[in-house]
Length: 186
Image 1 (spheres, helix red, strand yellow):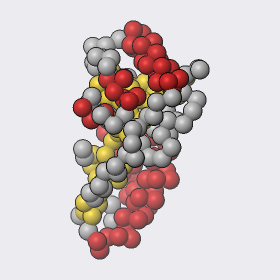
Image 2 (tube, one colour):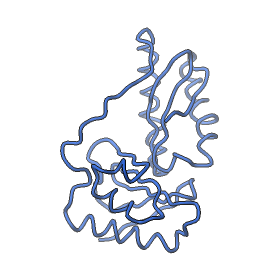
Image 3 (spheres, rainbow, N blue to C red):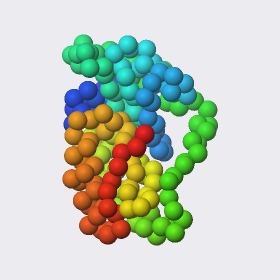
Image 4 (cartoon, one colour):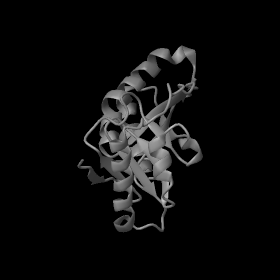
């Protein structure tokens, strides 16, 4: 098994490509070992003390390290955990994976605007962000403000604020005049 590794715009995060499907649908973002209870893969990665976040995408895994960890020492250990997991045949997520109830902050009167915003995010933003090992999820639209949750390499990335303000916000304002700002939320 050969696992490729790519740098991301976030120096604390590397993207690992195992050459197979990781998540058949959706994504999973684990900000702590406790949050990773449903994922044998994420739990194994959090057994490495330097790992602070794990994100599972369609065909990649991004791993975020602690600020004092050195990738030259941690990367081979992460590769070993990934290799062991994929060769073991264990699932990436256990069980049916109870879907988290999606709580969105939207005004029902803005349904048409929200549909336009979500379409732009899904077709233009998310594919580009996935290339960098992350994801951006729509969380709401109220009073002209689009609320987005940053996941994977985007979470904590030094350039994420610039991406939100100069990239995503400008694009959404251009196509959807009702948008006045974009805000990151947890």
